[in-house]
Length: 260
Image (cartoon, rainbow, N blue to C red; front, side, top):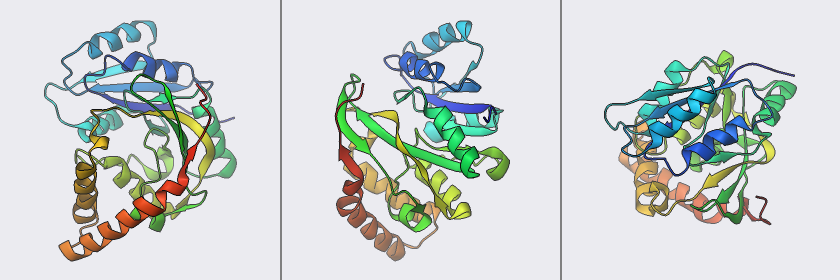
């Protein structure tokens, strides 16, 4: 069994309500060779105090603090610079992993000799209650499919630094994860998920993800800034993106019985 170090990057901002449970979900992993790099983006609540208390009991956790709010992308890049692991994985400060998440993904990587994988995930509400919804993905995800829809939950992706090196994260406030996985898929062409749910994604009422206008704006920015398309081509890509989002992506959202 592979036992290489996994670096888990957790950007934090005013996450006092969730951060303890999030870190505990990593501590509860059946695969124990990991390090957590928590990057606090100038929180004004008790986030830092909670993390420092957890560090006293577990030296696999480390904390870096920004003096001014810089955004999730910048925080992830800082964590990436500090990371020492062969594998890089991301976890937001309000999401959770199931106990066998890392073990199953590392086994999948080594058994299939691939440098990247992801998984399905379940949705929970702000209070942690199951929403009876599972987000799945194509079992042989191509770059073209990912180009028009981000099927990869950022809390589930894991990649091999020995193969890719450390992949820089965009500083754009939203959709850095999509650009990261596009970079990965552009190199390896296709990716296979571990075909089961290994994480819980928390849907919060005040999340940026809730704003449909913001989603359209940031998705359009990916086509303009990341891909470098001119305005007419970016509009055409965005139109196809919306078609996929409305008619194809829903096919991968399944109603399930609560599992928590």
